[in-house]
Length: 317
Image (tube, helix red, strand yellow):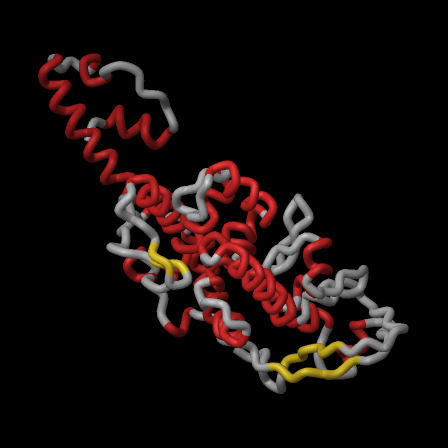
């Protein structure tokens, strides 16, 4: 390889014009060398970073909640391809999501089945929070990213001490209630899913303006326009990890944590002290019960809560 070109590559220099001409080569020679150098640079970079950047594999067909994704349309195909490509090259994020999926998927899917919701909505949860207890700048919180008002509307407690948007079981059942209501309204799971992002009122307005009831034909703001495709992309990759370059084995995955539930009906002055009394610590309590939002619990009303603590030996990997 041209040594000057290598020097520029590795020192961050700017390549302006044809350096090989300045080294005493003819224009014809330099064009040949430039072409070969370009290929060598490309190969060297790929060797250095350990990857070959290509457009990821696209599925021949795709569905969401049993409803076909019409990949015969170029706009639909390109939208899904964009999300698959974006996620495929987020290596660290996708590895972590795959590991978390192994821990939480069956827990969430069991509730969705009990509520009569298609299992693909699990991937909508991933699109919302990446299976993590996140809070958005807009105020949406928890695994299913409920806003305060919507959370309370669907029966979740939100207080300085307790926020059930961070409770896996209760927030999943609340989300399921929403999905059922939206499906009854629109008659399509795909549009019900889209409404979870933009709201039923906004979907209603667009239905009226556009005269359509099909997510893949309707115009939406960018976030909602990408929303269902992102869920389908998560589904596609996570069910075919090796096809997308993620060579993870069973031992790489996070196992569900074995717990036991402790009934709490009164106030707790200090969760750390409470945890110590149950042979654990506040770190473990928070990890297993993100819905606890304070270091104490004011429970004058005598509500019943179930706090998960690690089963004996569960912390040992």
